[in-house]
Length: 354
Ligand SMILES: [Zn+2]
Image (tube, rainbow, N blue to C red; front, side, top):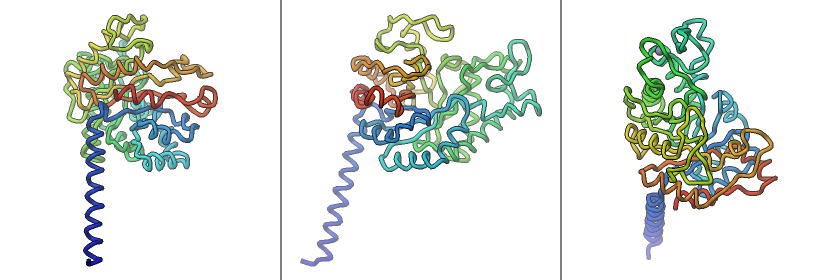
């Protein structure tokens, strides 16, 4: 037999087997309930050096890096040796990387107040105020924010094309004549529409951008329509974790901004899904959030865990057609693992994927 022909046949066989394996992997992926099954971490949590390996082994698809106030810390991290190694490890292991940040305070420098007051929000007293966000009716403010979103996106470049530039934590909207008829989800959506358009034009034609349903922007927008590429990200921070969110009658504490029951959260989620669609929607949960369970005070406490709750929560989100779910896993760092042992990452994925 001709050796060359055999080699070619063998090569074809290998290619066919490879193609089949890829198809099988795709089919296995398609049968999973959630395309994204992620965690969100501070860069400081990566004192646990093998986070990417632990994530990959558990079946976690995505690590989102988080900053509470400033984008700069993430830029510094990804440019550092540790950050570069983290990105290489994630790439090698097939773990996606995203960046989820309270960003508006960075995207529109507060210094610009001295150049143009009207970029910033008018507060209830009629004063221009640099505390949060911007005037959503200032086309110049939106232009600056969109330019900066592209600039930061060149460095903080998500491997999924999914961008997360949130309003500042505790966000307040604008009360100027043009903005005051808009609710605060309408106002943030005006900003997000400008950002997604710029990201698609200058960085990635398929870029998508989060509209976070959380705190002051829990309610869906009423007047402004999302541009193509804006998806809803639902973050029910005041729910309880010893009962499933599917248990509608669970009564919650008296947080002024948050719903009074799980039912309230589910109504808000469903109303947002009607506006933004289901396939692209993302849930940002707190199942693995050691910082939250520790009351955001060190020393960290051990994470409470319930296989039943995660399974029932997964059911509740999957049956709504949601395909992207992620959880804060902040403060699961080297210190945590040393004190409490391995976190329940495999249980998290198994519970969610059902
Ligand atoms: Zn305004």
